Length: 120
Image 1 (cartoon, helix red, strand yellow):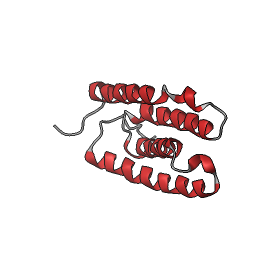
Image 2 (cartoon, helix red, strand yellow):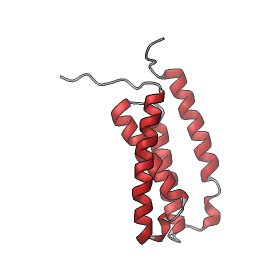
Image 3 (cartoon, rainbow, N blue to C red):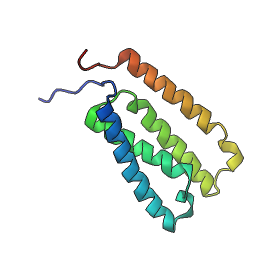
């Protein structure tokens, strides 16, 4: 029987891992953007890459805030992707950035309060 890992707090190593995975995902999404216009220099590619980084970070390091920020980045990326594709009017996306900032703040607060800290 395998022991399920508990969520933990971020460390410089987990942040570096998230950044590298997000950067690689962003590069791949930008390559897709060569053929598909909504990914060209858009917030959608950036947010979706950050969501992929959070998912990878959660699977590898179990960072508590990634359980909140990953879905937030995914939802924000999809909204901007739909806006870039013309399915949502761009004026209706003004609320995404404030919602993301509030959600990120809440995620790190939850991690600070409830995350398992390693070492002293």
